[in-house]
Length: 200
Image (cartoon, rainbow, N blue to C red; front, side, top):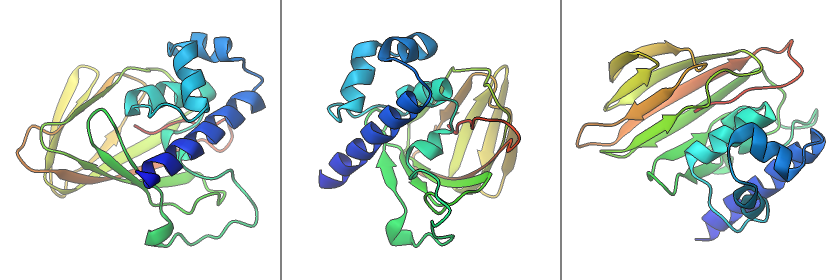
């Protein structure tokens, strides 16, 4: 419970800071993302546990990656080493899927690594579509299997498979098996762009 509270407090501060930094009101961010003003306000006060889908919409509206919402603000003095004990872990309250930010928090880098554990039977759908900056993303299955829908294409990914993903289209992750699936997501953002993008 305490860990969830800490994560919610971090997300509240991070989202509020990014919104203010971009000069967006609650109403403006709500219009950009399709997330209600009241929901954004609750999240920014740490009074609501947002789902992965809601966070993805907010990240897209703010021009950042979903993974970066869990990281600290970039700093020139941040350590390039992320010990396992210091890696931020978050559980989606809707599906129970677990994500761990592997990359050093706050360290300037165009690359981000995330580990995801998706429970048996879980489904997560992202429909935020086209982004303001480019993101190259690959997913590598470590254990189990998932079905991944990218627009009109569907891929069945088994352990050891690696897929390059275009996230500028609706994306659906499904674990249709009876066992959890564990996979690594690697993202590289366009460092020439003034803003950064998201991960699913």
